[in-house]
Length: 217
Ligand SMILES: [Zn+2]
Ligand SMILES: [Zn+2]
Ligand SMILES: [Zn+2]
Image: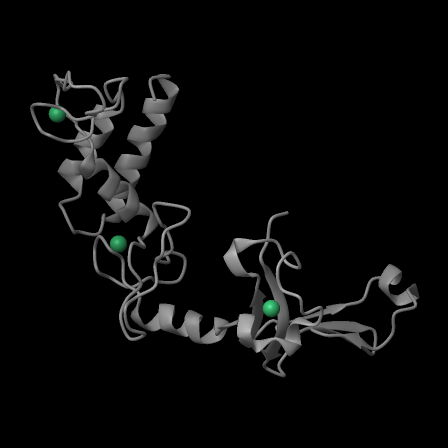
């Protein structure tokens, strides 16, 4: 696999994030003691997952590890290190990140972690600010619906490459947005920048299910 990053070392909290009974297979294996961040003691395996600092060696130019850098031992080469702070990052997200649609923070079971592109950069300009471009999952679909044409009679722009409806100016796919009715319902139930109510969420989910059943979306 193409990967310019190799883990050099990691500073972990000395508190295990998982403790489980060793399986008989593990017990019979010769490996004793510990291979960090796993520690085996008294028939149990402890895993230390709370990373304070991760140090990665990054091969220059996005090349695969070992292709460019002449250092075999990456820990001897701080010039290519990149430091990451996973726990601080999680805390930062918990404290400051709000949804880009409704501006509310996440809650248990409804976190703000839906992005719209796989390679988007969400990092904020300053650590006390919110990450950008992240949504509650229901807010993400509301935001999407508000960008789509939901005209009863859409009018495609004849110019090539212009996937916009000439009536409303919003996005219109080649297939003429067969989900238009669901988008219209979503726009009616969820106003711009508002968090969808539980009732609205249920109604929208039902509408999507019907849309899929009818085989048009
Ligand atoms: Zn290097
Ligand atoms: Zn939201
Ligand atoms: Zn339209």
